[in-house]
Image (tube, rainbow, N blue to C red; front, side):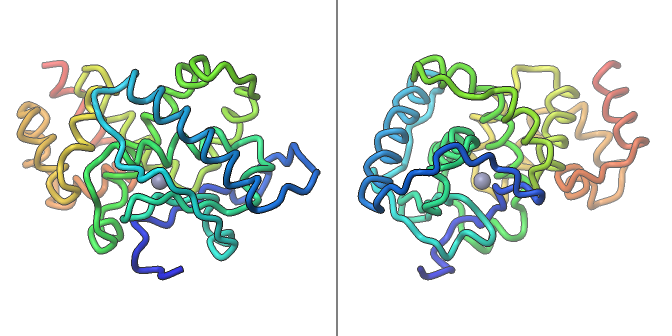
Amino acid sequence: MVKSRLVESELTTPLTDSGGVVVSSNMSDEEIVVRITQDLKSIRDALHELTPLQSRWNGSVRLDTSIEKNANALFQSDGTIVVAPRLIYRKARWRTLIHEMIHSLGVPVSLEDYNEEKGWEEGFVEYAQRQLRPMVMARLGVLYDEEFIQQLEPTWLLQPYVEAVETIVAAIGENGLEICWEILQQPLKKRAAFLILKHRAQARILSKQSADLRTKILSGTMSKEDQRLWNEEEAS
Ligand SMILES: [Zn+2]
């Protein structure tokens, strides 16, 4: 695998590695690819019904054990979804596959931009995943362990980004998913400016704060004072 071709390299495995192995039988690589491709097609079709966006997934799945150290799956810039074979045995695989498919709904993101502002991609993708998962799974008619996944998700390495998006959504006071779909259609480097221009009340506060507030917001380190100002402006 050529690393530079990857759009992202998130750590979907929690640090505790309690991913929940549910299947102990050995599937061949071919069987794993067939099964995951089927699941991804179902997820894509459900997302096409539930969102206004179209997937850029090219329909192919590639297994790669070399990503296992850092991730369970990746959406690659050529439209391929790369999967660590072990994912098939994990109870959390549904959330991971939905997450990767939501990446495919957004505009292409270069690795360079991603490394600089991954929060503006990962935070919104994962926020949307958590909001949509029950609806996607209901359409798939698959029984899965929602409680297990809810306990697992706060341990996700990129959790601060999701919390930052929740803060932003609460401050704006509009439908969070609609904000996600708007954001994912903007080039990564323009997402912060887009949000600020669209929500000028919050932007005034942002301009009074330190120049790197937008970075702080999406690195999950916004101070309590910043949050108070953000919320106060929204209420005024
Ligand atoms: Zn991701």
